Image (cartoon, rainbow, N blue to C red; front, side, top):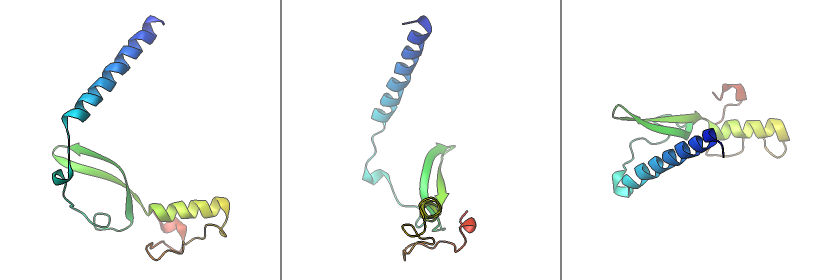
Length: 103
């Protein structure tokens, strides 16, 4: 193993150990959480959280808008409207008739 490869392996091992230590230090359970937003933070189309981070005392959540609608449109466009019709036939979804209006 070269010196650079060894240094990279040691750095990676240190990073993994730090992540494990942080994860083990913070043990959260159900009582630590409370619901603060329903149905997409006031917009039902904010349907899928991609990531979250704490920053300056606030929790920020990155969402995908109309995820089910855009996924169905992509499948319909790629594999055909017979198997994956757009707009989807699902009473729980409110997809735009024109898929270019989903964003």
